Image (tube, rainbow, N blue to C red; front, side, top):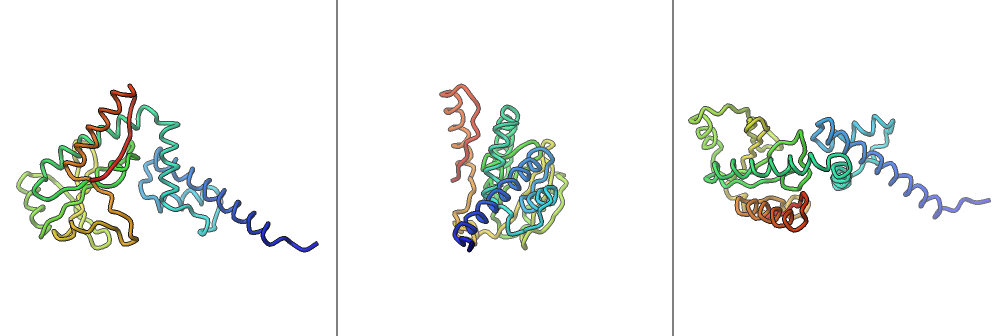
Length: 216
């Protein structure tokens, strides 16, 4: 009896999606529980743990993020919202101190998926990274500088929380989309203030915790 190619294709597609889902769930656990912060590394490690070597079955970052939200909701229902709120409040303090460098919040603290191992990620827009170096040196704030795709990242400790400052050219602040065409997700000081205020209103209305996220 001849094979039904359409049925085979549907079966292959279903199997592939099941593999992606399993990897996404395992990667989310690694990120939430073990501190594997890089999505790419987390999903590859998860695939290895599950004995899967088909890289075409790896989930994309959106799938990882959705699985992470589900994991946090199920297993970190009290801890994660409290940690997220703390990180957002600390981010606002840092941004106010660095207001002259045009700071924007990005990453998991903005998106609402930050947990116990997350760092605060800020973008700064200045003409010369030496301005930031002098600012930190004059205040005896220790730091290390790394590079990420040609962007200098100042790594330091803020109230026992990792703080990463990505320094971009001043005129790059006007870029509103990523290389893939997606809107840039970031929040200014005003945007973060509004986000925290909205959380307060939501919490008062619901009597619970909120992990809403937004951009400005």
